[in-house]
Figure (tube, rainbow, N blue to C red):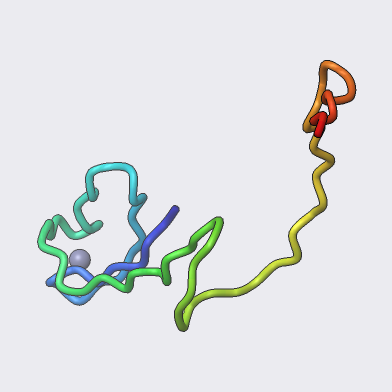
Length: 73
Ligand SMILES: [Zn+2]
């Protein structure tokens, strides 16, 4: 994921979040400002950045070995 940054020299760039930050084209290495993207969650979450997506139905086989024995009472 690329993250927009502003170097101390004022130039703007984008760095890969998974790699060490490369220096600016002018040689500046100090980053003055980072605009972090909103976090993304998969699963159960709540908060101002949450977008809900419809969940797909998944068939679940609860008894792959055949019918379960019924309790005798
Ligand atoms: Zn620069």
